[in-house]
Image (cartoon, rainbow, N blue to C red; front, side):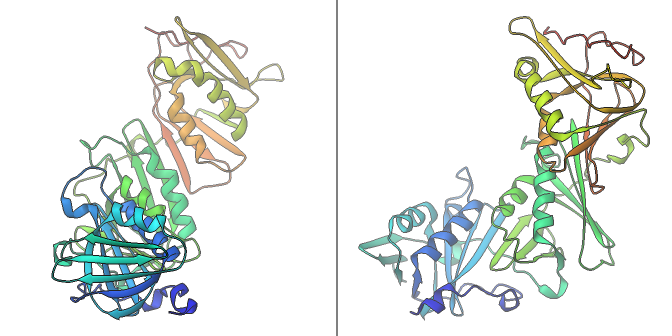
Length: 418
């Protein structure tokens, strides 16, 4: 096998429109250890964390033309990739993923030979200084894998998509008992897609462009965890194609990587009604300065469910602009302040510092704005200079809040543990 054969990637235009059923036969092929190891690492991100079905802990290996196809799934997400191979005899088999990955990882760089005994479904694998026999399963026992049809696919810039998933998915619920809240809603209409996630306490929304407009609007509910795992294998140098024509699944292709995510049925919360249409107080502040202030106060605030008071006051040079404070009888108190430009009325409001920091954590621009109406209404955090993203925070209840018209030089009352 020549070096040119094994390093050749699977061109996007050469991917089959629909995946063929795995070839039957005594698979015999040779691949490069480094390519095999990387492919196994990529598809293993789709393996289940719990033993739902025995076959889901296996990786499907199948010949596909002059390449080797590898697939793994947990039924919510399926990841498939291709590597260059010298195929001597077509065939397929399902092999225990962890066993195979661990063995390949111990091999030295070089050729790896795979030979399937079809009668016993045993793979004989040889590498540099290593020989192994691994018991497998018939490929027909592996779940069906969806393919992508490029003729009906939407196209996104992969780096823009990756960033959007990172900036939205963290706001989804982690409670599996609330699957809709643990999803990302993808609303595709015209020449844009809006991605939204909420756990009921905060909401993250990002709007990104499509390469070509769509005629029929569509809304998809995809588990946030599946999108986050798919994000880890995307290559920004390859475009991202998305096929939304399947019932119950969305299929994405990125170069030699194919991801299929299960769709959820249900209605995503109607969030437009809670979005403030105007603000009474708006703060513009350095992203790093705000992050440092909130991080400092969170050291104490984490002892009382990350609760802290935020006071914003317009004023002159004697006013810091923003003060954040918290106190816990058993631990102590902390107050931090930073300069900020505040327009509108003075306001005192309480937020979850952990949620606040997570929202700031996905902002790369030097300044953010915080828009508020009252101490009991949602606030909106926006990167200054980026109209495509916003993060909504629900305020927390605080004991005996001061009125919004508090003096500009007043300090917020500490939040006390109850």
